Image (cartoon, helix red, strand yellow):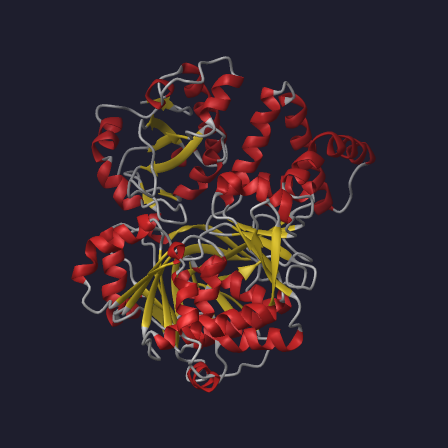
Length: 608
């Protein structure tokens, strides 16, 4: 059994809670900007550590005046914005606990999160979100109060709490010890009903303090980031708390269509994203170049950039390659950097593998993408590639205070400062995922001699064909999904004679690609799914993925679905992971038709 231990570099403090992280920052640098808010003219207005702390105290007083008691749970449904962190810390200062609800949740999902957690109040952002909550409010007798951010209710709460004494806030603030509940985060759930993940104050405090030592390149006086992934997810929540502790300036932009303009004006030094975002930036740049008649030079620049990064890994860049790279960097790559604000040096990527191609491309772009690995149950990161010593294709070594081992069946198991305390009111499910103090992640991976972890698959998603071949779907899905016209890929073949795939088209990129390839850009998804050029392009992507695996693991058939797999359709989680079991059930007839009377082809895919 492989095992790698990374000792903590900060002595644990069992009495500390998350509010101490903010107080420490205010003590050290009260005038340093911690946040920046968008202004009406497209600019940004800074909020210092001292100003944020004052606003937190004022809102905490409002919550106390409204009757919130220590230990009470408050639901929050809100897009990524400044008020998210404001409410987060105000709730902690009031001695209460926040229960995030994804802003895309259905009424039934909202009901489950609030009823299972025992929430007594609810905060929504918009009228539309409130209407979904209001549908099931009558069935939530414990929820006595509801506030809406867009109606100005947070300012009203703060104004009503001015008579609450500072001493009362301080009394409540210090009630929670490290082992006490900090938040309940309900897993998005690729299978079954969401479970409430119990994260303690120590999970956040010890992970934040230790992580800041591993990541000095991004946690420093000159760093800034623009958050756009949902803060209901632990990934963005952890980074938000880390930034407050480290004095990193944070801006917010929840509308990804406005992301590039926001980046241009905010000029972040690092980003937090899932691989799909990096794929979109690359694909959009390629198709834009294609539309301007510069597709060939873009592809050459990408090819040279990847070769340049690989040469850096090898220890020497040939003179001819360095000259080529310098020219193409000035002509092509510099424009992509400028579009991203011009100052981005690092990015933290998680939730799915980035892939070697994009890792090398962005590295030569001047952006080091630090792939990491973690789950809600581990307060986000278990491991991350340090910028000063990273290996493309891995998710880095364990963070300080964490241990990773690989079980005999290949499963990744972890223990340490960020491992959760169990599932809320669910001892049976908790017992299933622990082996002593080791959390069984359900993911498959490998450790190298330096402790760098590589994720190779998901234990529950391993497909066993009729011939007994074990196939990891992600190894095929991830490279195919990188193609600009492909939206989602679901590999199937459990107890079937060969491997097949369900594929959807990317509705945003498809018209651009069609126009660039001399086709009618207005054709429907249904028409495009039968278009010979589209099918040939998918075939190329499938064949490229097949080239990385054995014949027994390769995709022999695929079907292009005429409907997208989305979070709204119930087929994706909020972080865009596929709900494999739901998809297999909903498209069972399509899958059976692929295998009905069909024989496997020899070496190439056929379109179903």
